[in-house]
Length: 338
Image (cartoon, rainbow, N blue to C red; front, side, top):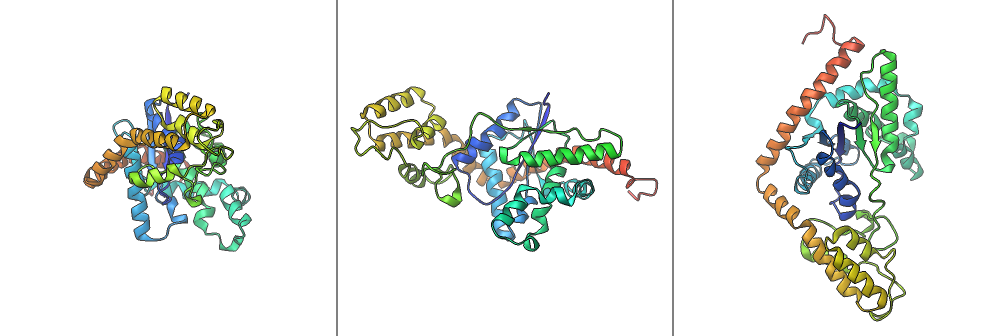
């Protein structure tokens, strides 16, 4: 039974798009309505593997925090905090590094991907190489039953379970429960506007969330549709058509969606109208979030207070775990100074 979940959010720098929202953000946030205890943290230390600019990192952290709060993360129902505010994350990572082998670390996807892209083993920074250890510490500190991740992150949960299991066996005590990966089955890979590849900022095939209406509309109007349809009176294909995939995700007026699909198949509606209706659906879906984000931008003291309150709650749990670990391994003993 899942009673507590934990989810980390890395401030990578890319603006959120609807692929992020439906693939990750929405399933994460919905958990706060279904699970007894939900912990969400801004994984700012993890961002150092790719961002090494003070200005950029500060901007990224602020943007993602505002995005999640605007999209529905409720600090009254969840514990929301910054990873760097809890020293125990780094402390437990040092301990856990002794319960995982170099061979296991070399088999991790992030490291192997770098090598496959032609990066030499000698030039891979240790932050990236050790990323799975810090991630394991992030998780195990809070002893969650489950961790919501994408399929590509399953390996991280497996190595976390390995570290926890080895630690438990060495000290003959079930200190860490073995967390389960919670992989959402409701939404698969979100196709990009090009109709060929996964939606990605780097590929330029996204539909944003918080950008100005003119930008969102331009992105929607550029969507790939049925390439065999030459004019509006030609019967069109709905299955696999990105515009209709987006309608299914975004449009809350299901009657309108079915009507558009029916007319599209019969050649009774053009691509322009279908896309314009999609733009209106996008506005309805994110109107409240965009308004809330602007309000939060104007009251950063409120945001700071939310994070401070969350950090205090998280620290109580994390420090209790570290005290248990330090006592068990012999770090905390009768000669400890504090």
